Length: 197
Image (cartoon, rainbow, N blue to C red; front, side, top):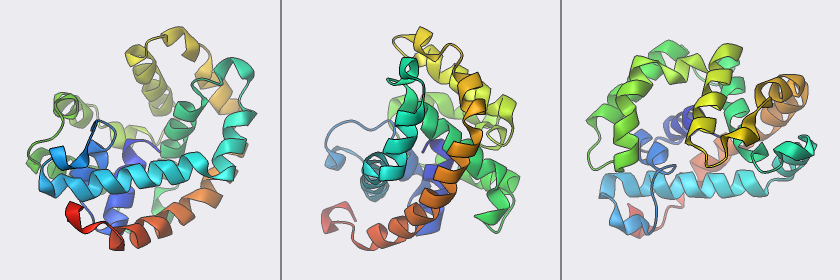
C-alpha cells in the first residue's frame, strides 16, 4: 500500500491521517515523534507488516518477472493505490476528489512531520497525487517518480508495462486482501499500545 491506501485506512480506523502517512517517512523509535503522530505511525507499521507477510502479497510479488523481483513489492503497493482509486466508490462514501482535499488539509495542519514528508506535501497537493492514482497515466507517473528516488532507477525500466499486463492478478489480490486490511485497521486501532496514545 502506498499513500492513498494508508490515508484511507487511517480514515477507516479514525486515526491520524498525518501519522499514518508519516509511517512511510518515520525512522527509528516511534516515541521520538510528536504524540499526535505516534498511533498512526504504529498502525502504519503494523499494516505494512501484515501486508508483507500475507500469502496473497507474497504470491503476487512472486508472479512478477524475475528481473523485477527487487522492486515488485513497491510496484504492488503503487498498483494497490491505483486499484483503490479506480474503485474508490466501493470503499468510501465520499468522492475521491473530496477525500483528497480533506487529506491534504489534514496533512497541512499537522505539526512535527518528518522533514522528507513536509518537503513533498506542496507538490503532492499541487499535482493531486491521490486523485491521479485513478488513471493508468497517474499510476505510471507514480512508478516513474519512485524510480527517480531509487538508488537503481534502471530496475524500474518497463515496469509500467508489466504492471498493466498483470492487471487482473493485481485486482484479484487487491479485492481479496484490502477488505481484510480495512478490518485489521479498525481492530488494531483499538489495540494500540497505551504509550502511543
